[in-house]
Length: 112
Length: 112
Image (cartoon, rainbow over all chains, first blue to last red; front, top):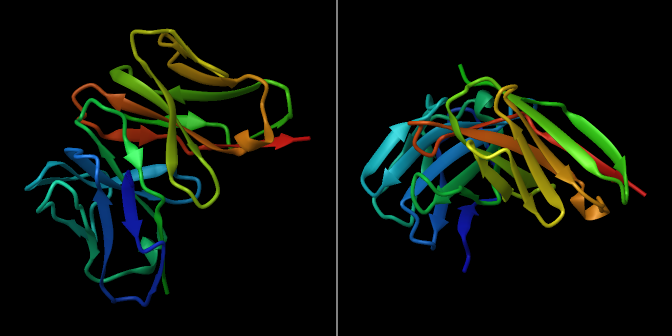
């Protein structure tokens, strides 16, 4: 049982480039979410999804897009990367909105 | 508004007890969580407590919740070097779906 899998582990982008951070879970979890972790700020919610076909914005959604075409996958897209998006990104999932979150191991993104 | 605060650092000797503290401002919390993050890894759920409880014990871990003072603590008995990590508390608010508000994390260092 792989749990929550994030790829890539590390990525360096130049300002203005685009990329997609992948997140997949094999636990048949309905709820999935993306957080970013910055020093001294804890984790902040970017976007979340309560089920396939449904997404919504979190605390810091600007500059990011998401989609949820399947239950298993919840990719996070950066359309035009900015240095302010340098961070560690975590994907998390839960069985439903009342169950604890399970986190992936993160993607460390640097934008130069 | 939502605000979760933790002290940044805690250093203890191996075999001693560690107490990590957390304060929060929103009284509509439903669940409060403790997560552990080891270097380069994701967040691992340690334990959680429902807001109508005041204590929960799980092996070496004891969670105390004081709702009146909005104070949460995590006690680790017989602290080991493997407990060195960053510990995050997080709250889930009533009606907030599965969105968590995280503290900034407490780095626990266990010395021999």
